Amino acid sequence: MILRYYGHALFTLQLESGYTILTDPYGSFHDYPVRMLQADLVSVSHHHFDHDALGMVAGKPVVLDTEEPFLPAQDVCVRTVASWHDARHGALRGPNLIFVFEAEGLRVVHLGDLGHVLSAEQAKAIGTPDVLLTPVGGTYTTDAAGAARNVALLHPRVTIPMHYQTRYSMDLPITDEKPFLQLSGADPKPMALCRFTSGDISERPPVMLMQVTP
Image (cartoon, rainbow, N blue to C red; front, side, top):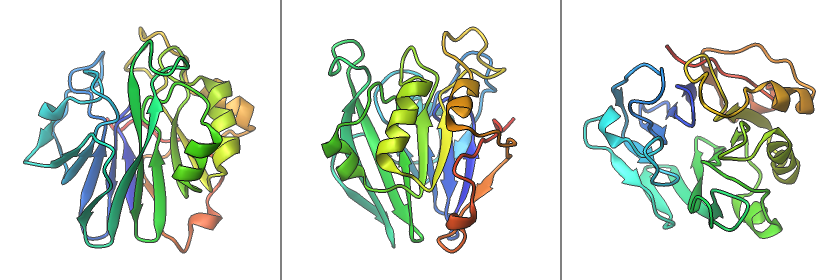
């Protein structure tokens, strides 16, 4: 599978078959390029404008925004774990869905706009990720310290930060990725894309950083 990052919480995950999953589309948002992306499946962690802009997705993708497990294609399973957008059980920003994608022998977990440290029950429901996509920017989501605590709970093979300030969102009141990388003791070089297989995931570094696709 090939993972690409478009900034904020938006990734595409393309399987060898060509089947493409897109997460949390943001539409017209700060200075990010206005995009039109192709996908077969779109996951929406919560219905805020910068995570459910379906108009930026071409075609007629299946949209997942509920807790029911789903089998969208052969050997592809998607399930969710309920969580909150803040540390007050949703009182500030409402609910958030964590998406667990299982395909090609790998488990990829997208935490959405998770705003709290996971409970033991939530961590158990998620399982051990091969690839964990976690927000690190704070203010609206977990900050570096909260993200690091969730990494310690989940023990992912690879962690990739998301939802942090980039050159396209300098006026967004969140931090960049550096505090999280410092806490992780990592200094990865940004990658344009990441290719993962079940055979080589163990050879990947524990923390990876992705460039925002222009």
